[in-house]
Image: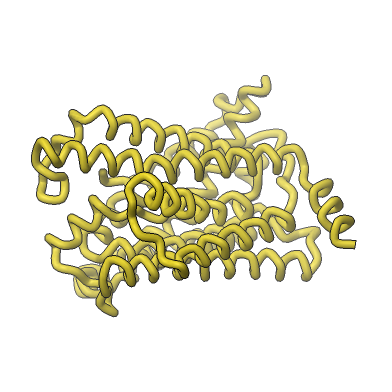
Amino acid sequence: MAAHVWRDAYRGMSTDNIKGLILALSSSLFIGASFIVKKKGLIKAGASGTRAGVGGYSYLLEPLWWVGMTTMIVGEIANFAAYAFAPAILVTPLGALSIIISAVLAYIILREKLHIFGILGCALCVVGSTTIVLHAPQERQMESVTEVWDLATEPAFVLYAVLVLMAVFMIVFCYIPIYGQTHIMCYIGVCSLVGSLSVMSVKAVGIALKLTFSGMNQMVYPQTWVFTFIVLLCVITQMNYLNKALDTFNTAVVSPIYYTMFTSLTILASVIMFKDWDGQNPTQIVTELCGFVTILAGTFLLHKTKDMVDGPTSLSGRLPKRITEEDDEDGIPLRRQDLSV
């Protein structure tokens, strides 16, 4: 009976979903490995020059650091391509797999400690990811970027986008000037809200490029360039406020909270815009949500046990700036959020 269920689940995955899955897994592999290679480069550069944590830039002359940076770029390209083939509810949660790769490689190559509960956290991430993969919805077939534009301009998603922009402006102009240095949710909130819109635009641009490469030129449509402009604007905003969060708070606190909010809002935006759950029964939807919660549990457990190994973290997550900078250099971030190095 169990074999029959697994066979049906496998057969239920479309060709596009399988391509997106392979690209997402490749992205996690490259990005997870890139953190280790970059850290090795930072350590090597710091031994002969000024460390990055105290304002040095000697790592820019270290070939190993550039190898890590190139590996990260390859991973980002693979992740970008994955959104063109598979729904965001499948691609985005799989980003947590990079922390497993980072943790395992750090244990093997850098001789960093991995707590027994950290191993359990890795196992939970694998179980949750497998659950989502087996029950993910099928990718919608698009014939033109104008179809994506029609979905983006439907009343439900327009309402979501307006609410997101109102929340972002309220946080930026009303709350960050007062609470930005003491409340982690201010910076993370902006990053996550804007990030949910950026993923929808990234998916639209990815679909446009996929159709263009298949012979149906989408560059002639103004909607393609509008989505591209939105991607650039959103990514710049995310980088700005994420760097502020990393500079102000402990990475071990920022990463899991950002992953939780960003992934949750991205799934919500995808469900509203692309109607990912249409055609799925309640059992499949609940199973996907359980898989996501399992990944969250594994992510928090892995980061919490990192604190147990490296030392206690304050409840507020606030650190003196000097300590935070060193943490940014030496810590292994959760996913692709470390864009400042």
